[in-house]
Each structure stands twice: as C-alpha cells, then as structure tokens.
Amino acid sequence: MRPGRRDGRRTFTIMATTRRNFVTGAAMGAGLAAAASRQASGQVAPSDTVRLGVVGIRGRGRSHIREFAAMPDVRVAYLCDVDERLFGEGISEAERIGGYSPETETDIRRLLERDDLDAISVATPDHWHALMTIWACQAGKDVYCEKPCSYTLREGRKMVEAARKYGRMVQIGLQRRSSRRVRSVARFVREGGHGKAYRAKAVVYRGRISIGKVSESSIPEGVNWDLYLGPAPYRAFDLNRFQYGWHFFWDTSTSEVGNNGVHHLDVLRWGLDKHVHPVRIHCAGGQFLEDSDSEVPNVQVGTFEYSDGTLVEIEATTLYSPPFGGVRVGGVFFTDRGYVTSDERWSAVEGRFTPRDRPDSATGVSYRTNNLSFPDISYHPGPEIPNLKEPEVSHFRNFIECVRSRNREALNCEVEQGHLSTSLCHLANISYRVGRKLEFDPDSETFAGDDEANRLLTRQYREPYVVPDQV
Image (tube, rainbow, N blue to C red; front, side):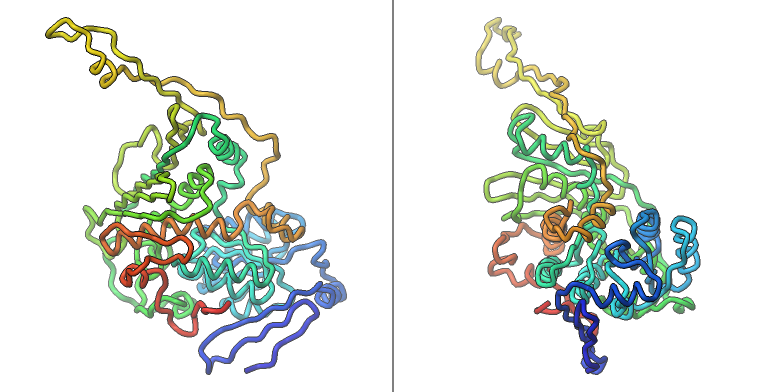
C-alpha cells in the first residue's frame, strides 16, 4: 500500500494492484493548501474557477465538454477516455469554446489522484457510472453523472451512501428536472391542478436500426479495452460491443427502459410525488423481428404499483409504433378530470361523460342503465398549466452553482432522486428477465424470499473494478 497523500483538503489512499482493488478515502477540509498551490502556479483559485474533468468524451460526453467549457467560471481541465483516438477532437472542442487545452488521461483512477481537480462529469456507458461516482466521492470530488445513475439497484444505493458520507454534490443527468416547463407541470400535477392523478404512463417509441452481427476482431490501437469493460465480464473485442453498440448487451446496458425511459419515468414519479419504491412490478416483452447480436428486448411493457394503489406504466420499443395519445416519447398523467399529456409542450385535457338521452331503438324506452353505461364521451381543452416564475437554468449550470454553494438541497436531481427513478428501470428489467410479476420491499430494497430476483439486484464484478459493500 502506498502512503496516503495530504494536501490540506482531503486525505486518500490508493490500494496497490496486489489487492486488486481501488479504494479511496476522503476527509473534508477547507482546501486552503490546494488553493495556495494553484495560486502560486498562476492558476485561479477554486473559489473563482471550478476545475472539472469530463470522463467519456464520445457522443454525450461531447455535450458535456461544450456545456462546461462555455461557462466562464469553469475550466474543463481534463479529458478522460479509454479511447485515446478521441482526444484530438475533444481538445479542439474545448479550445474552440473555452480558449484553452485540457490535459488528457485514459484511467479514471489516475485522474482522481489530481489535486487540482474539483469535480468530474461522467458520460460513460451505464456499467461504469456507479464505480466512477463512488471513487470520485471518496477522493473528495463532486460528480455530475449521466442517466441512468447506476447499472444495478444496489449500485444506486451505494452512490447515495458515498455522496452522504463524503459530503459530495452528486447530480444525475435527468435534465428535464431543470426545464422550467417540466418543473411547472410537475408542480401542477402534484398540487391537483387538474384533479387527482391516479395513474401515469411513459412511452418511448424510438426506432433503432438493427446492429446486425459482427465477428470478434483485434483491439484497435489506442483503445484500452480492459478499462472499457471495467466491472463487466471480460469479452473479446467486437465493434458491436463498443461505441453506441454497448446499449444492446446486458453486460453494459440497462435496456431502452434505462436508456431513454428513465427520463420520462422520472418526470412521472416527480409529478405523482412518489419518493418511495413501488411494491409490485411486472414487465413483459421480447426481442421481435430481430436477427442480430443484440441481447436486450426491443419491446418492453412494464407496470409499477405503489402501496397506495397508484399505477405507473411504461412502454418502450425500438420498432415501428404509432403515437400514444399523440406522444411518441414522453408521458401522460391520468386524473379524475381527464389527463395531462406531454404532447404539445404539456397540456391538460378535460374529459366529459354525457348520459345518452335517446330511447332504445328496439323498444322505444329509455333505460337509465344504458344511458349510464354507454355515455357520449368528449374531450376539451383543460386548464392552462402556468409556468413557474423562475429563470431557466441548465442542468449543468445548476450543478456548478451547487458545487459552489455546497447546498445539496438545491441540486435539481440529487443522487437519491436519480436512484429512485433509475430503480424503476432496474425493477422492470429484473421482472422481464425472470419472466414474472415481483413483490418488492421498499425498505430493504430486496425481493422477500426470491433468490432469483435478488441476484439481479447486483452483479459479479471483475476485479479490481468492484463496487464495495462499505463505501
């Protein structure tokens, strides 16, 4: 074991590879020595500039670079990726927007040893989210982590524990929580603006072209394949498991429900004011019309039942589908007055039942039971959903403001909220994979007496990439 390092802000120790584990511990401090060192070297003190590392710079990670580099009080000091071929374009992006060149690193563990790093943003595949977040918290760094927050339900709980233990700001990238319109809708529904909501449904109808089948191939030069796989089982390299293709394999993916469904499940849970897990879950589906290497379903239909009977549903498919109530990707709240739909930037629709006032065609007699059972149904514009009187602040900006203020409550999607929403995706996937309806204990976050389902609450980690029991 190498001795722990002290810089006045934190103390952390990295375990040697003979233990085949990476563990860091952090102590809270004021950061005075680190600040003095940076000022002496001509750099701006952390009170003026947040120095940040973007981890995972392909695809979504490029958005992270652009967002943070555009902030005058943030410096994208580091870019970290297992694919060294991406660094050139990433550096150019930061230079174009921020006017400076970040340093580069391939291994998150070495990045977290940097004393001049305040925070990281994580835009890697799902299976890395939890471990990077936990390691960063232990090293005294704040974290912006892309959705879904975790690969398994247990990982999400460990992320919450790490954020609490080390006093870190951890924002999950469910960015609809920073949309003023969505914030307005969630409050409108919670406060009964269009009646009592008893049910909500998310739909994700997004077509995907089949990934087809590819053969194993040699690892491209510049790709650190072992680091890419990290906590997942070792597999020989093939292009379908790399780049965007990782979404189609259980080793690295949380299915389309976790990929895009989590955004809309989060909005529904927020509007329904549910801050607990559901108690019953059922998810069916399959892989239809597919002849490819893909392992995850291309159709999933899930139902979640809360202890008070409130229902949340999701339909996710990557095949052809007509819109549901005018919505292809979004959500609908059902109330005793009608519904609230994300179609047309969110609107309320009022439903009306009108008893029929005409006699039975055969007898000429008007029967009350028929009038009540077969009314005329019409739909009309409901009440306007007023926008909150607050400025529009991006999800990334909200994170930086909380890094400065140290006000965890001001995070628009703090890690525990991200965990609760992401858990819906995990529960749906577990039900789908075991092939039956499940009973869940929200307090213990386990399936009572169900070993098969409980095994899918976690995973077998490949050392040294292990999410620890004690964070």
